[in-house]
Amino acid sequence: MNSSPMVSIICTVFNQEDYVRESLDSVLQSDYPNLELIIVDNGSTDNSVRQIKGWLEENKEKISVIFISRNQSIPYCESFNRAFEQAKGEYFIDLSGDDLICKEHIFKSVACLEKYPQAAVCFSDAYLFSNDGKIRTFYPRSSKGKLQYAVIDGDVYELMVAKHHILSVTMIIRSSTFRLEGGYDEELSYEDFDIQVRLARKYPFVFSDHFGIKKRLHPKAMSVDQYKRYQSVMLPSTLKVCQKIKSMNKNPKEDLALLIRVQFELKHALLSANFQVARGFFELADDLGAKGIRMKLYENWLKHHCDISAIYGFLKSLRTG
Image 1 (cartoon, rainbow, N blue to C red):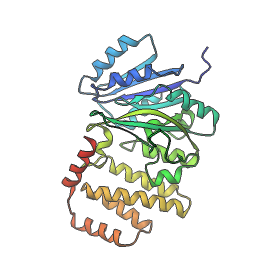
Image 2: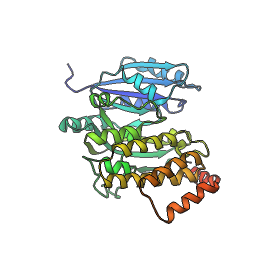
Image 3: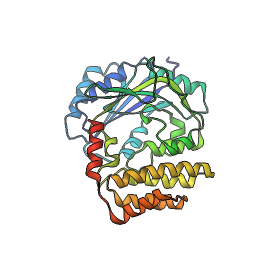
Image 4: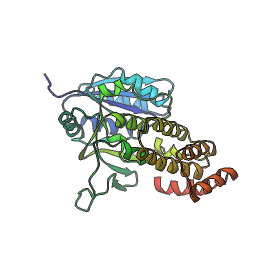
């Protein structure tokens, strides 16, 4: 009988025919002995399902697999919550069908969570790579591979409110805590910012200094649409999360952290000409006490709907390849 706690990997696929086999292969290459794999095709219109079925036929004896194939896509958070209902693992990973799990990731992360039973999440570093061969790390490292600064863990709520402190794809989450907190919020178009701050509000996070995930950067990645010109479907969810955070905050320092985040999102909403949601961020910033020249600039930008989104979009495209 396997004494290692089970880990459920829920791999969601949507039009990732070019990447999904490599992603699933990385699960098999893990050195962790007790895994459950749940594959969800969320209504792909390319050959993703054919690729998944071919992989399953080749590897059905190697790992316990549940395959869920949807005829039509449904919102991500709802899709994941439905799949999670079938998960038996004590811990779980939310894996995208274009990312890769590093061999020792699960073993090292579970060891941390077993050592710190009060923690809800273990997170780690990641390789960020693109199809043209460029690669970098999420946390800055020296030429010898050492972290350039200590990664803060424990109570990370205030830090995560203010900035992008954790790459969500590296997280391994305690299933019981996730259930207790109600899973992903199905009113949102994406999940990671919200679940991070909700969990961090109540529970410590623990950092493990290893590379957990190889995250693929490409123009069709979901994150590219965060600041999509004119019609971001993600920014309204970001605004909802920021409004939630305001109600969760307990002191002025946390409100200041939120203001930093809100002004960042406001700037990018304006740059991408998402003026309606930008108005919501502006009002929230004003409610948090924002003053000064920057707010005057944003107010006039909103008033006149100054559209420089074409330039902004071009500069973003250079970054994503």
